[in-house]
Image 1 (cartoon, rainbow, N blue to C red):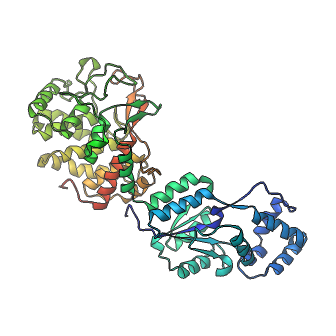
Image 2 (cartoon, one colour):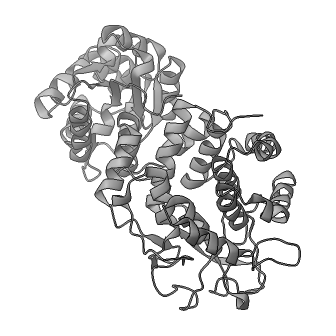
Image 3 (cartoon, rainbow, N blue to C red):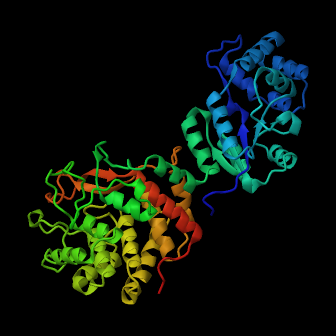
Length: 494
């Protein structure tokens, strides 16, 4: 699957473009009018099988109303139609975005007389052509109407989007190979988002978002609190290679998650191994300083020999598999992996036994663990490590494909899959739907706080505070799309 299909044509239902006022009053009750418009007589009229006179004569006989009443009610209904300005604006944007290469057609169930009246009443200039059921001799959702349009407009079904509010009409379009979307003008926001995602280049749009919000890609809690923190900024930097995008407060040795005081936790938040390990692998630092920090980390080991989380013994013996993986990445990068053997063995056990399925103490989901395992493998060409982890990692990733998730979760999964040579089109398709109109990808929850409101101090397994970063999610999505499309394995499968 390509993340940017070369669509060059869109077919819309004209009823989405023209809105009928609900305030009109006609001599014929609305309920009866609906019955008229869904009668076989009216269908034949729309297919061009009946003249207006013959149609009205039959309707008089079927519904017991005079010709004058029927004509008046239909005329008032038609005259109440108004252009949907927001949708016209959207179509103009899409045409401009395509350098006017985009063709826009409409298919409408409409008789010849009504079509002629509407052309005088409403502006149809947005359309390259209006196709009516009377012209085709068939109505939607009949196949014949679609085939007529496809032949007359020389339509390539693989490059055409069909939009209609009726699932039945979309089903017929899909059966002929068109990309069908059930969308209604009543939800113009969703229509804008969906069409921009289909016609725009997702990577270009996402990069524009990052550039437009450079330096302000801050994290936020699910309670709406802004957090200025370093961890997400370091990951954005690693994913994009663009220092101008991030806002990082640097530390000379060990690093702190926060820029300053802790937020939603103790103000005097301790330096942590997770942020420190990522910082020392992403940024260039003096090797003697790195050596000194790693030596200090080795002083914080639990009774099983597994590395802890904080440079603070008062936090207790907190361990987290993702933190352990990131510390391993640091030690492997600087060829000191032998000093972390018990931690590595535990990580292997976590991977082997799927202990990560519900996330970890500080990370929200399984994909966080799997993604950082991939990052570990990227940090080293150690043959033994690749031989131990890569085959098992590939199995575990295959198990995850297709499982619903948020944007960051799907992006991490796609990146991880691509790294071991797995093409994950199913999740790529789902990920692309999370792109917002501004080019960003939906905010996703990546970290989580213990319910006590303090990192590392709660014995409770309940997590109530979630943290996400739209910039990080967007950077992950860009990398996921690029990884899936190139599918050049970053890790040699063994």
